[in-house]
Length: 236
Ligand code: SF4
Ligand code: SF4
Image 1 (cartoon, helix red, strand yellow):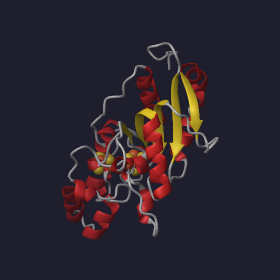
Image 2 (tube, protein in one colour):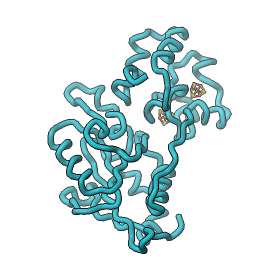
Image 3 (spheres, protein in one colour):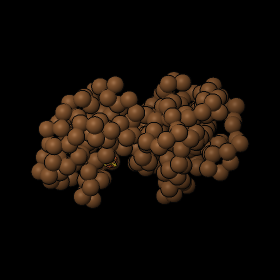
Image 4 (tube, protein in one colour):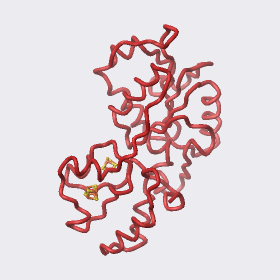
């Protein structure tokens, strides 16, 4: 990443926050160690929950918020963060769609957009480092990345994988899942479980029908589709 500054010459102030979550997306930023030196010249990290959960600056250029809203405290905190940040990024699939927590009894995770305006959604469980860098790079220029509308299947073809859905009738959600991971799981002979959430305009019901035609019980197909994005089928 090149050294750059905000248009007025000062550093970009960012806050990295975690609501109910595993911390994996915040760790993804931490793992950008190769870029830390350059990042440090362009950005001031004014708050980072992984380091100090109490810090809440009065003003931020951007807030990267991980995790879903599962209780009142999350909601209040999110509202406070929104008031202080010019740009709010939903970082990771929990923040974007509620995430995998809905599978466990007790949590009732909701995505950030149900409570505040979200300026950019960065899906992933956890987020991909190269996509995180793209967001940070755009913030320096005072904008946000263009949303890429490509499926995991599209990337899977580029990797020249054999299609597990077609050839083995495996439960693979690549056709309706947002790409960006280079079909990581399929590359390792697994299948896509939809961790990056629904592709824009993806038709969940058609996906369920397709899986059913391959021999998968309808209920299992539906449950699978909603593992990371509760309400996916209602969205489509
Ligand atoms: S294996 Fe899955 S991700 Fe790859 S092309 Fe087939 S359906 Fe798409
Ligand atoms: S292949 Fe599917 S489940 Fe695996 S990382 Fe990519 S989006 Fe997530």
